[in-house]
Length: 296
Image 1 (cartoon, rainbow, N blue to C red):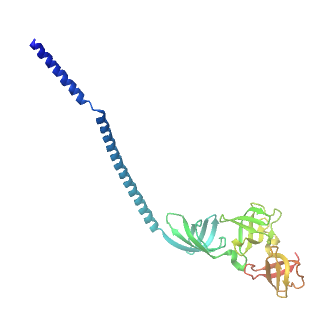
Image 2 (tube, rainbow, N blue to C red):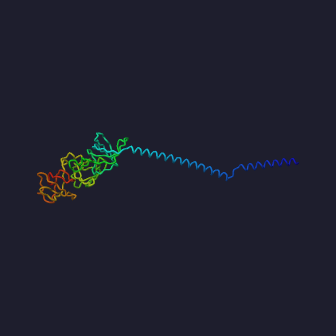
């Protein structure tokens, strides 16, 4: 009987020990949460360190690129060249330099103090960045030294394609791609049968500079061979006349004075009469000489 009790007690002891062991090996909810939080913290720290390293590498690369750019810019020297314009196409101008070499420049962002439109035959000086890898150099500024538009002490001339015609206003696109508007209120228009049509190529002689927008003569390509395209004339009402000069008021109210040429007379006309003065020289420079005065 005692032996049975001893065996029973031993069995109970073994069962109790096993139960306790099983209970202690299972983690509690608190322990699981703590371990998860610790793991997430470690991952976050590792991610933060990785981000820091990545930012450091990116910064180093950017600094390296900046240094390379600065070195490249430092190697590109600023130079100047003087030459004769041989071609103008939109913003690109081609010149023949004094060294007999041909250069191409992009004038899109270039500064200039000239009021004249750049044209073939003009002598210019260009300041540019000499990037040897670029065929078309980027111009910083340019200056027109001699303009064919002003050769012979004549009024400036510009050529282009008519974009629009609105009453006494005409707008053209020049070879540079720029658009210019002119008033034709006092201009002598030589346009043939087609007239001033959109798309027609024209040559405009104007007064002053491009900002004044005052045309003195307009000749279309179609009518360029006409006799009327071989001379300059201005029509207006007689203001005063003497043996030496004549003054007329044009349609816009502007008065123009002309020195009378040899064997040219105007004193026989009466004030207020409409006259046509054929002249040589420049109205811009006030040195026009009348070679004929008559009724239009």
